[in-house]
Length: 323
Image 1 (cartoon, rainbow, N blue to C red):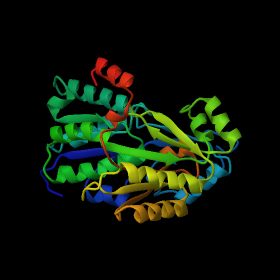
Image 2: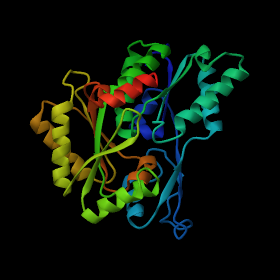
Image 3: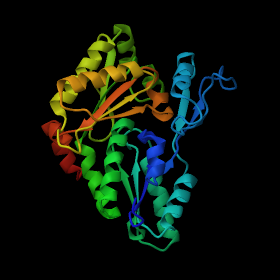
Image 4: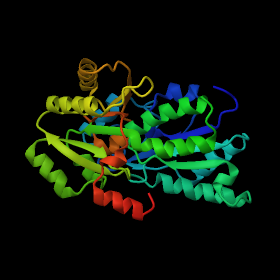
């Protein structure tokens, strides 16, 4: 890594290997989680801690505790954490970019912007950008966020300045596609991510929901399948139809909660039907795991501009709102 490159800050939702983050000099801001089941709050089965990318607890133990009744709830980094991280980065004398978890799923981006504005005010700058501090709302879930951050590292190391990297990320986020499957919708319902009526219907029908994110970074259900094998085939077909095949973006990011065998199978299906042989394998971290539960598996990749896949009326609405 060159000394002249800009600082890059991410959050623990990115699910990148910790070794990669450390090797590239990234600052990782951690979400936290607290046990919400009062019966387990003070027991070894309860889940309370810092999302340190499974350094202090294994993915297996985390999800096994959820299977046994743990109901952890998440919190984004505090204002103090944001401010301390931004001050430390700016004090290095280098410009800084923070690639934030989706505003469609969390208040993380808004909190970061508030902290950046306060630092700008205390340092007598008209805006954070005048200090060389750029905050980008990735509008992506965790697995696609990791895929984008991995490429952002390469772009930074190839010479993009902070302002250029921020502009790159604001455009690149629309070219990342994702599809993920959950065992059921109970955890998403508990976290308020989907209506209770939808969760109840999914449970009654005994189906595996398939979900994605819209261009605003909000959850969107795209279908259901009966059985995980059919779900994995659907995901492989989704990749085959939509992925970009150039040398740098032909990578499939496959994330799993505690479904490693299914992740292996998905990689096999993709490799069999395409030329793809490069896979970014990760575990779905504690922050996202609290909301999706055990058994979740995700697939993300680079493809065409997702803004062109929205309905005509939604595109018109986006123009009205200046997007």
